[in-house]
Every structure is written in C-alpha cells, then in structure tokens.
Length: 340
Image 1 (tube, rainbow, N blue to C red):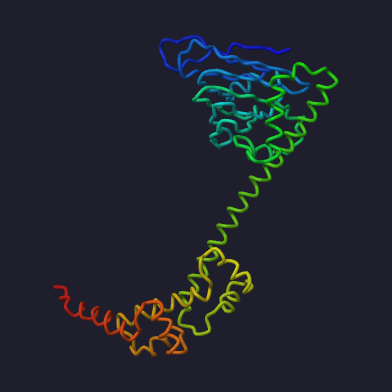
Image 2: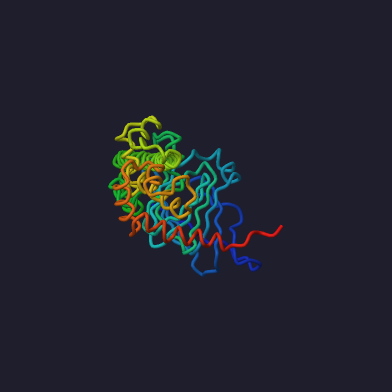
C-alpha cells in the first residue's frame, strides 16, 4: 500500500520563501522543507515499503529540503541512518553535503546520507524517486560512504543504469510484492546499491590519485627544465646525464616528456640555440665569433650549429650577429647616459 503525503506549506504573506512550521517526518527522518514560490499545487510525496527499503516519489514546485543538526537530533531516537539513492526526473537538483556542492542534472543518479547535515535544493521543481537504504544493511566502509555523498554516478556505467532502472520500477510497484518476494528483492537491490557505492568510491579515489600523479609529473618536469638551463654550457648534457641527476632511468625520463610536445634532446637543443642567439645579439662575450659562441653553449661542431641555427631562425648565425646584433649595439650607443 502506498502512503501519500501533502507536501505543501502554509502561505506566509510576509515572505516569498515559505517554510513549513516544524519539520516534515518521512520514515521517521525529519527534515525542513521550504518553497520558493506561491502555488496552488501542494505537491505530492508517495512512499512504498519493500522489506527494509523505503521508496519515495516526490513531485512538487521549486523546493529546498534541509536536514541539519537540529533535525538529526530530533530523529535520533526514531530511526537509524539511511543512505539515499536518488534518480532525478525531468528536473535536476543541487546537493550539498560534507563540504561538497554538486549540481545533479535531470535523469542522473545521486547520493546523500541522512545522518550528516545536508541540503537538497530543487530550484526548478521537484521530480525525484529516492530509495532509503538502512546504513547497517549496506555493508560498505565509512570512508567509501564519505566519498560518494553529494556526488553523481557515472551515467554510462552499467551498475548505475541497473540501479536507476530498478529504483524507477520499484518506486511504482514495491507495494505490490508479496512479503517473501519483497524481502529477497530488497536484499538484491541493497547489494546492487552497495556495488554502485563501491564502484563510485573507487572511481573517486582513482581520479584523486591521477590528479596527484599528474601534479607530481609537472613538478618533476619543471625541475628538469631548471636543471637543463643550469647546465646548458656542458657539452655532455643529454638524456643520460639528466636521468642520472634525477635518479630515474632514461626510459622514465622520455616517458615524462611524452605529453610535452617535444623530446629531451630537442628541449636542450632549443634552449642552447636561444641562448646562442641572445649572445650573438648582445655581442658582449669574450669570443664573439660564431664558433666561439657555439662552443660556449655546448655545440662541439660549428658547421652543425650553423645548420641548426639557420633552420630555426631562417638566417645564418653570422648574419644574425651582423644585423640584429649590430642594430642592438647601435641602439645602446645612441641611448644617452642617465644624468645624475
């Protein structure tokens, strides 16, 4: 048998946000409901029991449901904690719990837990089917539960699809099941929900670990860039010396740079060419010949250096020195000395 509850609050002419006096008890889990607009539609909440599970269908105008410390304390003698699995209908919601704020789109599966403060806001109207699973029956670790509260399940995951389909069906038919079937079906649904929680918690852990791994990779790459800049003038600088200096294998070093759009050798070559071009422009080195500059920046073969330079800058290093460098030096000569 289904139990139908009128969820409307009484009008309060002093505010556009109406609050129900007291709390609305649903399955001995009190919460406070607020309506954002005046409407002749009171809204409906239908509950159906299936063994130890409770299915609730709610349809109403824009509302916000809050369960804070006061409501939790009020219901502590009446009920145990429930894990809530919700399937959104034509409208979405915003769920806030355990420091997370998650926008849940229409049609998505989301979660929250009744024994820690939370807010479930439906700014576009309420159209939701939820299943309340007793915490003791769920059989998952507390840290797994904490990871999934106020999150959205992977819409493409097969377990999430099964949970959503089961919840939508049982929200309408749970009351029709005979008692022996209801108990067994409730245990099967609970196992399915526990599987989804485990999967969701593992996915969250993996995403966190991937983020940390990516952060560590970028930090290591920055260290290698700085090391290359400090040792550009060393003709022995190369993947082997860099890997040895950072305590990793050459293979690991190359793997680090797979997503950087360049190789370690090309990085060294590009930095050396840039440093050489800057020195040729300034013309302030002890030996400003092309071969002298090339040797200073780790190029042991002047002819090879000239070919690389021309390929990168479009002109020979000597012409670069005579044109860009000459213009730079002339500009410095024409700049008046500062007056004391």
